[in-house]
Length: 214
Image (cartoon, one colour):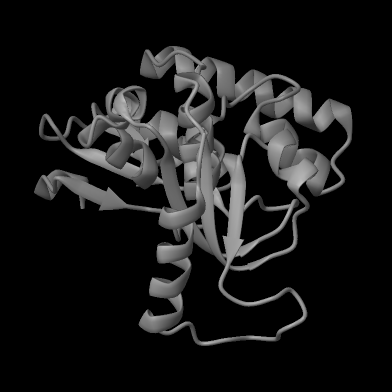
């Protein structure tokens, strides 16, 4: 697929290959400008070391330390042959990112591509407030990757972040610990699954616009 020269190759739903599969992948140059799109959390991974994706998978599978170190050693030699440094996003999908980099492709998450393409750090620095949304806001997921990334941009730019959520289970104190100034819910926490209508969302948007101050 890379040989056909797509602008973007989405591998976000691909299962991470085992090390043997990874080492057997052919490495050949791709057209300049090709981007392999990986899951957002994978884009920040390295491959080897105690915090690398191989070690994390090994711990999850119950592998002993000797097996993990042996995998790391083989992966390190493979990275040297590829000429790829073991830094993010080389560890994406347990080395699929490193293989794509070795082929000459760029590796990024969909959110990262949007952040760069829309120059969101620059826009965040010029904004008065950053507003984003999610279906459910809880402290474990913090609204998902989009909310987490926009919150990070807001914190870096020293700009307040407001989240509009279908439902919110996070207290004001916990919100501020997560870098979120306020959250506004369409439905109360006790309500089950809901189909949010345009009218409901519009009512929340008007409330935010009319009451939010900094």
